Amino acid sequence: MRHVKREEELLQKIARLEQQLSEERERNTALERTLAAEREAALDQRFAIVENNLKLLELKESLESEQEKSAKLLRNILPERVIGELQTVGSSKPELFEHVTVLFSDIVDFTGGSARLAPEEVLFELSDIFTGFDHIFANHGCERIKTIGDAYLCVSGLPEAAPGHCGNILGGACEAIGFLRERNRNHPHEWRMRFGVHTGRVVGGIVGIEKYIYDIFGDTVNTAARMEQLSEPMCINVSEEVRKAAPPNCCFLERPPCEVKGKGVMRMYFLDQTRTQW
Image (cartoon, rainbow, N blue to C red; front, top):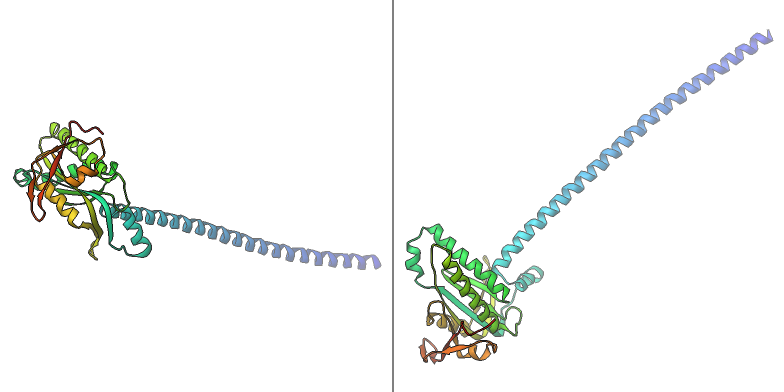
């Protein structure tokens, strides 16, 4: 009897252990499911974070690209320093620049020549010429201010001072004439231009609120325009002030004194392009 009772007790104990083991297995299985779900959720969260980071990176690159496009457009119409002032303080005050040289140029008989061309051809011709001028004058340390129809206005000595401002303009003008001559030899449409140069002080600043335009003002600008009007095709007409400020390598041909509107009689000179060495 004792033996039978002991076996029963052992069987009951084994049954309890098996029940406990089964319950423990169920708990482990549930725990494994929970851990698996948590791992999957964590993995999904990581993927979501990576995806969001990629989207943010793409957005950042797109924003930087748009900012660069905007900056490039601004650089086409405003000097670099003025752009910096607008970006940092939101405004740019007019400045007086004491020592600058201004160049005006325009195309001879542009009205008659352009009348024979389609509108898109006229725009292409101006764009091609002035784009070439932009590269040339920029390489000579000059700043293009604006174009007015077939006229091109540039300056050296602002917004940053340039001790060699006069030589910069004259060197750029000589190269611009060379560019035109070469273009005329290899192009169906031939254009000639007059150039006028004067040196002195100007005021520079932004004009307008809705549309920013950087412009320069003063007697120096007006006199440069007069020098251009009294020039001749493919010649660089300069004032007495330019002759005095020009570097030693520049040679000039004196012209007869001439009455200049608003200025009286002025001495003028052609830059001797054959004798001047750059």
